[in-house]
Length: 288
Image 1 (tube, rainbow, N blue to C red):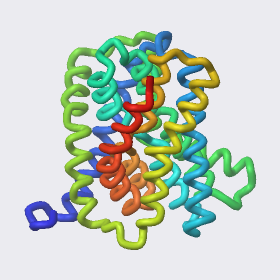
Image 2 (spheres, rainbow, N blue to C red):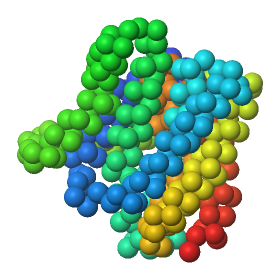
Image 3 (cartoon, rainbow, N blue to C red):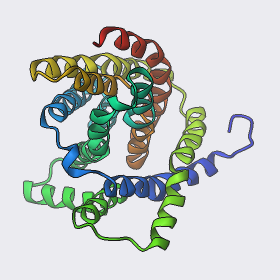
């Protein structure tokens, strides 16, 4: 995009494909493959997701009180604080540091990560978009928006297929696999063009706040909760190291879905990923 080899309009089309088709299929496939019984580890999930919702709340309220952003932007910023790159970075780094047998806790977190974060983010955003309406209409509008969202529909459909062990025709399974393979490369390539469009400029403050919340506060909360809940060393490693990852591409996908805070989201993914080279090294030294 910088050199004019790919147009800005083409980036919008590419992100539309990733956001409305490829990423939903990725989530659908992920939900189908979840081992629901194995993923239910109350202490591990409690430590991780209480930490997640805490940094979401801190990021959202911090953006409102400190940076005076409107609520929709604040929720996007909170989502960036909460959504760590649990899959691409978290699994790879944990396996490299502790071996393949240390990944059980990571898998438990990863399987519920997107559904949980998108559920929190979409619910909060729809409430903000429908503020001022009477409670019954608010609940109705939020529910309608949730079930019209391709990401939510994909996750619910995948959960139903998994729960009732519904077999997919081979032709459908093959088609899904083909789309899933291009989901993350397409989204990452598109975000490269987005980064050229949205320079950090006046958003340095929120980006620094996201960096602190995602790379430091989230793992600190998870370490405290995991220790308090008496998680074993392997569980603490998985939970803390996953929470210490930088925000993933889904942080920008969420912002682009609502057209709010795209510049903050895109820049924070890049800057926190670079910063995580140093903070992850520190967490590896601290963890047992």
